[in-house]
Length: 344
Image 1 (tube, rainbow, N blue to C red):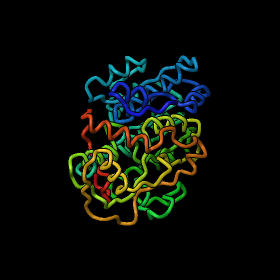
Image 2: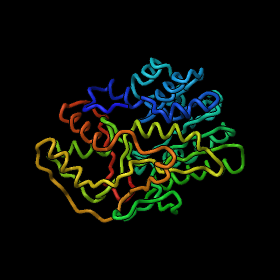
Image 3: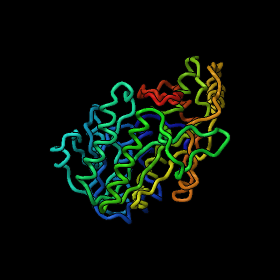
């Protein structure tokens, strides 16, 4: 896969985010049956759905790729339909509507709530725990790729290699606690029935319109302070995260297979800010100091299963700088990566 110097526009961005890797094509070639993507209207879902469809087409598999969401973003359904992905509008907390969804042996579960969770904890628990229980009962024999989060871990020493999959969870705040609840629900149903599950503990998927890099770049470009409280992080190009999420269907098991998905490097927020300052030729304003611990994950297992991310994070930093300096569109949804209290 060629790596360009810049990403030209949204069309170019979404094409690259949805371009299937050799690993995805190999995985889709071995899977039988349709693919149902639940919660496909979020930041990652549309390009992951397109990637699944492109991979199926590439191997000549005649299968449905069905994207399910409330689809509150204008144009989202039409964009997916234009690329051969079927769409279904559904409030999945409505049991009647959930029951009406088509059967499929392969399910990517992406539904959940993070932002706004501290202000609406009851809805957060409903989305992150009750809904998984409803889905497991609706599709009791499915092969699942379940998106979770690295927030389920406690803060790890920045000087170490990050949290590993066998570490005991140490969630901070109700959002992270509810995400452990989601994992436990899928684990329970895999143990009592015929479900097979892969859990993807994703940390900081980034693209040009959203993510920790756009947060830092925008602050540097505007001359705003960059908070160093969470002084280190891991990040991965969203196209690579999409690919590894789809590949994880081949690893679904009982008890669930768990894998950290993020970039293998432990990055310094201070160094990233200064890199953007160099590119923009702007002074960097820093606030606070590094605490010495952060939400960082070890990727040894991921690299062993899927290899290293295809797009190096240095390239993504360059792309992000160009995107910001060109004034291209963003989602305007800060990640709040600097928060250490788990309140989102």
